[in-house]
Image 1 (cartoon, rainbow, N blue to C red):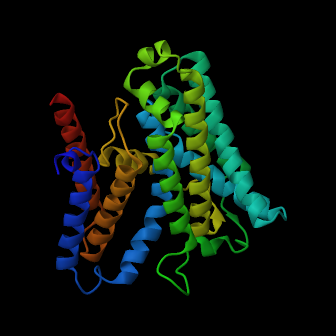
Image 2 (spheres, one colour):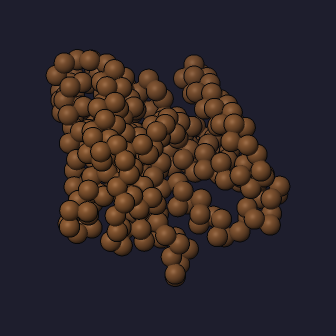
Image 3 (cartoon, rainbow, N blue to C red):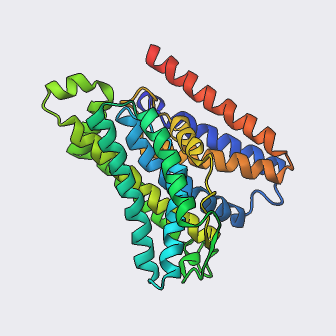
Length: 311
């Protein structure tokens, strides 16, 4: 039991259960329905997939502010390729690889020029957003989704659509990689103490390049899911998404100083924010109240992290 209590994701999981029960009591006729549970799962997919990549970035001691712009760019690339006559698979691969290449370039700049990740990804956020607007001629690209809308549409059979299962699969693979492989141990080592990691023979630059490339690829996959919801390429979409993703990772127990974090915690954090938003909507709470509550939870999560590190 003591070991369970020390898990960074245990506190957020308890908070998630308490918040869900609270809203289920306050709005039993609508919130507690199984259909609403499925809706919340679908609404969490984009943030959850992007949060997997952000977990790797934060655990290794970095940050990525370009996630929202990468997701928007992916939707524009997918819509452009579909409009040009390419199939849905080719369009999705194009969007994913485009954002993955941007993530690799970001990691290379951080590694080679020794510039702080905050500054580099802040610049990348603007560059990718501008590229999306330029590619779309500063307007939405309307196109036939070619079946991609089914990824997150309510399924005819079963509770969850394919997109939810894809997100779960990505989370499982990432959790195994982070905890049970050499690469995962190197990610933790770099985030804990980069100088010591170098002395131990870890190729820090290669780890950093891989982390940002993977985060870019996952942002591209999140863009596919976003396109499935929007069915248009929107260069102005996902503004502020990076803050939601970072919040999910921090709420899930990751430390912004690096060296600590779990995929499970990030998934719980993403679900917690969705439950708060959905519950607030069912209770008729205005959006500004929901934002205040979410911000307060982030502050509490960071305070708990500091207290845990102090002990």
